[in-house]
Image 1 (cartoon, rainbow, N blue to C red):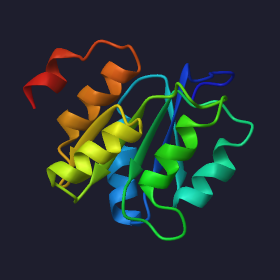
Image 2 (spheres, rainbow, N blue to C red):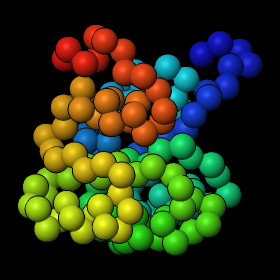
Image 3 (cartoon, rainbow, N blue to C red):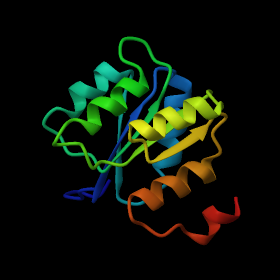
Image 4 (cartoon, rainbow, N blue to C red):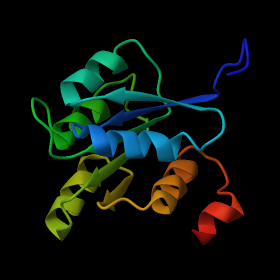
Length: 138
């Protein structure tokens, strides 16, 4: 990292599976100027969100302590984080799960296994960035 360099945007990845969390961090790390912070569950995410600004939250649904739906609900009722875009990544492919997450305030819903191109397209769109052509072709 260049001395004095500061990322222009921040993303919080909330995932209890370390392998999946690393995959998401690696994929999102391809976005220039995006700092990616990790949280192991919803409760850890709330601690990291306290007093911090994030431009995007990517969360799993099924997690111990505080699940992704409760996290989405909490963020949408918190004045500091109400407008932060949220991407849900989950193994839950049912229409009811998707509907509930979106009704609670998630902006995007991606089912696992995650395709890096879908994750990057959603993140870039929600961060207000254009998607590079090479990502679109993957």
